[in-house]
Image 1: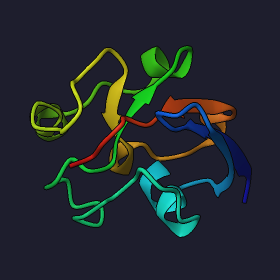
Image 2: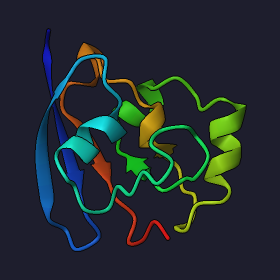
Image 3: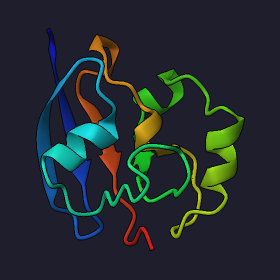
Image 4: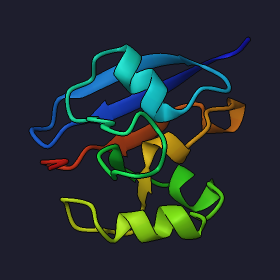
Length: 109
């Protein structure tokens, strides 16, 4: 199993570094590490939008595009949708995402 390093920056500018397992979602890794700012109210079932993140380049354009369900849910997040907006429950971590950097919105509710 490979370990992926992910950097999460909150609205105040503080960065948390996570060492994640390949195959898990970014949301699962953040929840397991008790990262404030990833609420994940639905537990990754794609029904709440409370795991919204802003993925930085170069990874934002390298990820597969959001499917219809994720895209629809992104229209209902508490923070405005921006380029790079994704639901962290839909980001599966693999070696191609080594060094992934995401920003957390100011609020998920």
